[in-house]
Every structure is written in structure tokens, then in C-alpha cells.
Image (tube, rainbow, N blue to C red):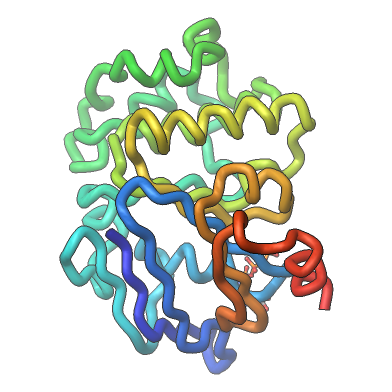
Length: 235
Ligand SMILES: Nc1ncnc2c1ncn2[C@@H]1O[C@H](COP(=O)(O)OP(=O)(O)OP(=O)(O)O)[C@@H](O)[C@H]1O
């Protein structure tokens, strides 16, 4: 479903990604691990169309999208939950969700479609607070809102950048369950950047480890020893 081949990217003259190859099958859950500053967020941004690649190709759902605009990739089915959540703090929960709808992404400035019922089944907490402003929600609620907003557009691939950052452990478990539902029931593929290895391990079918802009290891959590991955992440 997603294939990255030989991706290179830079900020000015500073090269950040070097020859990255990565693939994700439909409904597969993949985690991208690596220390701070190795290029994980930049790689996600090249996939969603927010950072240009200097070499390589991005293919999604059988089509090359290397140079497509972010909104075109969103329409094709790439959903993105950025680091820091990216919700609108002054808009209500319902308004935030409507902005995620497919018609809003197509540029029809009508406030978007109705919110699909399955969104509230996945996020019952949000059903209880439709009129609350995004900015007054707790960190965990904001993260759920950010994921729900991406899900409103019915993506085929959901990309999440450190969804557990700054969230208490009990809520992390809720988010884990929601992501599992998204993958198994809705058959949406997941690409997760995560520092919290236990969380990543519990939902990933496969992992990649990145160091200094390169993929240095990949495999399946079932066949890998977490201690060796911890070691890889600490050197
Ligand atoms: N806008 C920018 N301009 C210049 N350099 C940048 C910019 N954004 C990131 N970088 C640099 O690119 C490198 C990769 O950053 P990136 O955010 O992709 O890493 P990361 O692995 O996601 O780290 P983190 O976990 O801290 O978000 C870092 O050295 C960073 O300082």
C-alpha cells in the first residue's frame, strides 16, 4: 500500500534522510523507532507531502505521489496525526471533527459532512463532550480528538507521530486499544513513530529502526528481543 524507495531529504544543505526504503501492506501496523533527531518526523512529513524529497519515490495505493500536494495525498487516503496533536484549541470537539471530514478536505467550505457514527463508537469519550473547546480537554482527550479527526476522513493509512507523548499511562492503554480497533476492525494500516517501546511493541506487526537518517534494522516484534532494540536505540 505504501512504498518508499531510496528517499533522501534535506533542510537546506543539511541532509536528514539517506536512501530510506520502507513499505507497509494494507491493514498492517508498522512502527518507526529511533532516538530524537534521527529524522523520523521528517520522514513522516515526506510521506504526507509536507516536506519535499530530494531523491527517491513515494508510492501509495498503486500510484506515485512523490510530488503530489498534501491535500491530494489526504484525499487518496493518507491520514496524519502530527506530533503535538494539531487540534484547534478554540473550536469545539464537534467543530474539530467536522474539519476532518472528506468534503472539508476537498475544499468545500461548508464546515464538512456529518461525523460518521463509527467515530463515536471508537471514541465514546468524545460523544460526551461535543461542545467542549479542544483547548480545555486533557492531553489524552486531545490526542483522542486528533486521532478521531484524522479518522473522519476515512483514511487507508493512519500516520501518528508520538501519540503517547505527555500522556498518562492509563490513557496510553485506551489509545492502544483504539489503534488496535482501527487496524483490526476498520482495516486501516498504521505507521507509528513512538519513543515508548512497550506501546509500539504491543501494536506493531513490524518495526524499523532509524539512525542518522538511515534505516539500520527492521523485523517483527515477535522474532526480536526488545533488549536488543533498546540497545540499538541507546547507542
Ligand atoms: N525545520 C527544520 N530546519 C532545519 N533542520 C531541521 C528542521 N526540522 C528538523 N531539523 C533537523 O533535522 C533532523 C531530523 O529531525 P526530525 O524532527 O525529523 O527528527 P526526529 O527523529 O523526528 O526527532 P524528534 O523525536 O525529536 O522529533 C534533526 O537534526 C533536526 O534538528
